[in-house]
Every structure is written in C-alpha cells, then in structure tokens.
Image 1 (spheres, rainbow, N blue to C red):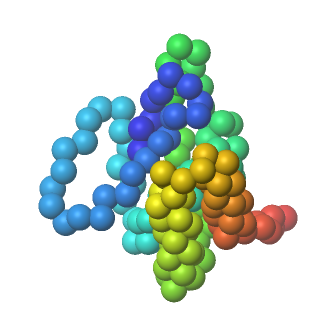
Image 2 (cartoon, rainbow, N blue to C red):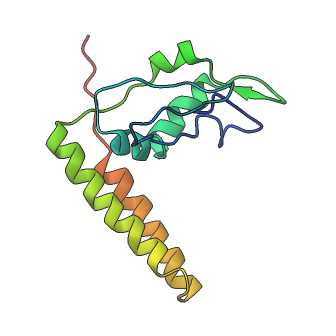
Length: 132
C-alpha cells in the first residue's frame, strides 16, 4: 500500500500480491500482513467506505501521507472466509464484464463501471454497531 501521494485519492492505493515468490517493495510503502482473502482486502481498499476513513488520517499539503501506524485505526469489515470468497467471485465477474467490453460503446462501459462500483460498495458495506 502506497502511504504517500500527491493527492488524497491516490494515497493508500494498493495491490494484492497473490504469488509465493519474494518481491521487492520500494519506500513509502506499507506491507500488510494478514490471514484474510487478499483480493477481498484489495477490493475493500477501493471502496468509498475506506476512502472516508483514509481521508481522516491523511495529512500534508504538497505530499499527502498516511503513516503506517495510523493504518491501525482503519476499520475493515471481515465477513467469514467463505463470504469473502463469494464477494471476490462476484466482484471479479463484474470486473471482467467491465474490461471485456472495452471495445464496445463507451456509454455501455460507463454504465457497467457504475454498476460494478455500486455492487462492490453494497457487497462490502457492513453496518458497524458501536458498543457503549
């Protein structure tokens, strides 16, 4: 996850490493160790819910940063492993739909992208209960 950027939109952009080989990672990067579905987390990190949380943690003017220690304050809804797999399967299907029609009518591509974002946010929107 990139912890610095020139703007709030791009700070905390991430990829999911699905391989087993060693990889090199540059500076200004946070590596998240976990035991969850990596693609589920990568999809979550592209949602409006995550964006709202990172916006509160981001600081800086010319260079925007979210320090790795502050990432601990991010709340990530974690359904069961099987539910995570199902969500990933559905989002992968939507993603393929969006990319497979790349030579089609631009309006159709835009509609599918909006549909994908809508369903992604709905599938990953878990109402959190505050305990007093």
